[in-house]
Amino acid sequence: MCSFPLSLLTDDACPPSCVCALDSGTVSCQDGSGSDTGIPADIPLWTSAFILQRRNISTLKRGAFMTNETELDMKTLSLPYNGIRVIEPYAFLGLPRLHVLDLSHNHLECVSGRAFHGLPELRSLYLNSTVLPQGAAQLTTALSAQSLRNLLRLDLAGNQLKSIPLLRLDIYNLHALVLVNNSIESIGKENITSLYQQRHIRVYISHNPFRCTCELEAFYYWLRNSSQCQDAGQLVCSEPEAKRGIRVEKLRGEDVDCMNENLEAVSYVFLGIVLALIGVVFLMVLYLNRGGIKRWLNNIREACRDQMEVYHYRYEQDSDPRLANVAV
Image (tube, rainbow, N blue to C red):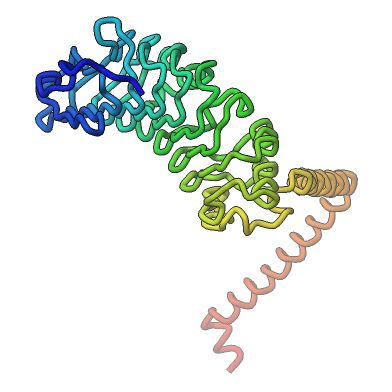
């Protein structure tokens, strides 16, 4: 266990506007008014858990938590609700023994590909409701850092992600991957293959708008054949309209069978071709018999005209009063 000079273990070592608990090694800096900005300059060397909230920090710069270029023995760093938008390269330099990093509820729009470098012992990374759409693509590169190979838990809930922002699942030691409340419609075959290989991973993926078409086939059979998805019973179809509200695991195999969908599409095309051929044949028959059809129409017209003349003659006789007197 590390030991520090007694001079460090005094109330004077606690940064302004912060509360320190020497026995647990916790430093908590929470500004309800949001008037404070930036990170306290002198974080005590004895700090094990550092909590910083509502400080209006827009950018985490290189070595933002180093004290006089000295590494800290910090294990937990919690930074929610600070309005963080940018994480520069090596922002967490000087925290080689950090186990837990919480960046939830910020507004990340620019994340350097080297943002998480220098965290070889990081076990849990929380990024809930913090990644803006423009930062999602950059996050994929940032999470591929070599120093995150020992990551056990990754929380990405509430970020409107359309896919898993990890290039390969097999380069991590993940035990829990939380993707709840995003915009994921399906999970690709490559990720499904990795999940089959990484049996220790537990996935949480409820409250996503799953599109229950044949594109969901690999994911569907993974749900049916694996117990890795811990909230499988809460996965519900969002599209198409006919399947909306149906639980994914309750679908039938033919509902997500690409072969059936293709055959159905082909059958509709074939039906359209047959109807078109019937129409063409009908038009050809009409064209070839146009003379007879014309004579037939003329005959009908003449017959109708003769009949109308008879009715007209009778009407004139009945309406003439002189003819009526003669008849009397």
